Picture 1 (cartoon, rainbow, N blue to C red):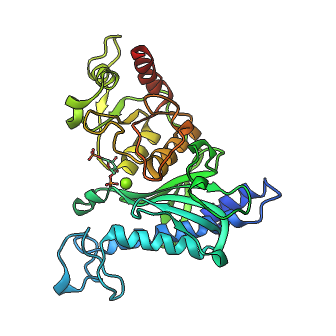
Picture 2 (picture 1 turned 45 degrees about the horizontal axis):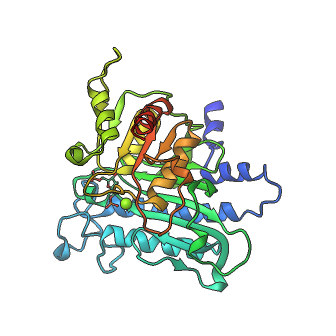
Length: 347
Ligand code: AHM
Ligand code: MG
């Protein structure tokens, strides 16, 4: 039957990346191997997030007496010491990436210093990542995620920070995995954006959202309005326009989860704009350039949207420090055009 045939003809993420690679005859399969290790990390974290105490799904893995009932503070994997989920996720990704044998330098939001991979396990890729973003949302069951970006070393020199202190436009690939009602991995290798959903019964990410394109203009704005009193002029004017448009268009809806992966995922699928602007208290905003702003900006551009820092195209920014922050406005092409115009008018 056609339906049965269809079941065994699934486009898994591995198959998808192998197909992509066959378009580059010089490729040696290293990227596929690296991605498989990232995917393994995502599956592991997904499973840990779902197993942790406090989750409605199961308490089986919790060692009763030590259970605080809080998801963020309590997770035990096969009797190991209980670890905070974000610490656990970081260890999972560091181990997965090092053991791929394809990485040379890793930057994680959780680690102050970059990890230089030992020579015997080195490859050409540099990976920047936030292993579990939005962890303040864990205890109430809101979606959280892993964000990653991948650069490649140009030659065989000793890896150093300059290999990752590169503008976002030099990334080879970027993506995120959202741990929500389902586990969704969104990836771009520089030729569009594709979304894969984990089928738990198969343990495989299946292509469910091929060639994601963000609507040219959206009806949603997404920002922490609690910071409004400290915003700069253009941000304040823009949000005012969202609520009280003067051109006869209808007002935009506000949606803000406070979990970047979830807010950006919605923006990508439904259109609109996500803002984490500068304010008087945090002149560089809150979000980190390497593993939050760059990967999400890369995905937005690949989906036909834009990403702007308030000064320039986000992907043109050259970071000076690995944990540097930047204001960010990203989303539908036309919506980002509007905020760009307001900043241009300021100058
Ligand atoms: P985190 O790395 O401490 O989890 O913070 C990052 C999160 C993002 O997911 C989200 O976009 C932002 O912080 C929300 O910040 P705020 O609570 O200031 O609105
Ligand atoms: Mg983060």
